[in-house]
Image (cartoon, rainbow, N blue to C red; front, side):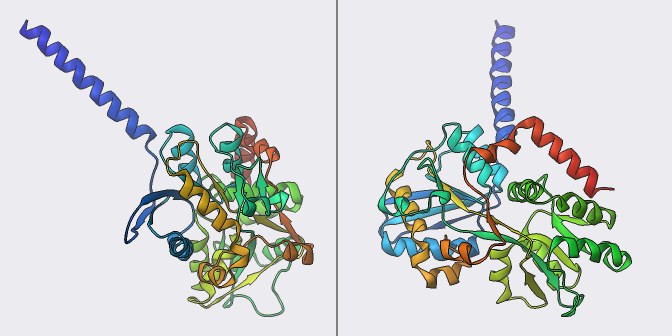
Length: 349
């Protein structure tokens, strides 16, 4: 009897350990978290986001001023961890905000997003929303950030072909001083890379030349901007322009170059997951984000450029990445694996 009892105890322990191991294996990684408590709280809006706190905090505070009583629990995770939280674990969040448009589209396509229609969302351009489930609220180009210590006024590359020629002509000066995203770890980086490969044949030549000069790979735009500003890097390719603009006020030593052959424009988007509990507060935030173009002072504080059709029409180089099922092509496992193999071979020569 004592032996049988011990066996049952051990079995329970093994079951508990198995559950703990399973949970740990699928637990998504949080980068940062902050609670914005309302004075007289009536409800809590739980947001999971890839957007830095410094950029999104002004938006949260402005939202709370129009929606008193709503506390905002803001969690930051990478785009892949955000996807894991919603898609794999069914984590309870009322709003998911991400720079990875393809992953947000997959959430909606696979039944993980709620539909919502309102006057503000109806006013968004057709290219800035999809199926009334994915809503864009910014348009952010990928830019070249260059070091003022390295570049003079006459040798700044203005397009990808000029950048390739620069790399080929000055290899010893640029070896180890070129930065770009590691597309294997960043969802936004993977999105930019796949779109660049569609827009121009020069993308793969550029990647190969950067790889031959021991390009340094980064997870985040802010880290690349920091190293360019310090002079550690001569330039960084495909940096988020919004982050570069926001750091210009606090950091000197770098310039932002918008390439004149084409600029891939990422749309930061919001999705209301099917796991949402505070749906009313989430819909109010979607409406708030959809009207950022009417809040210029707030845009300056956040550094996030709102949806602006006039700006797109005035610059032919701007190529907004379109929301829709086309974004799912490179999420196919075989296509993704093939793309990452080609990219790794090119960048790690």
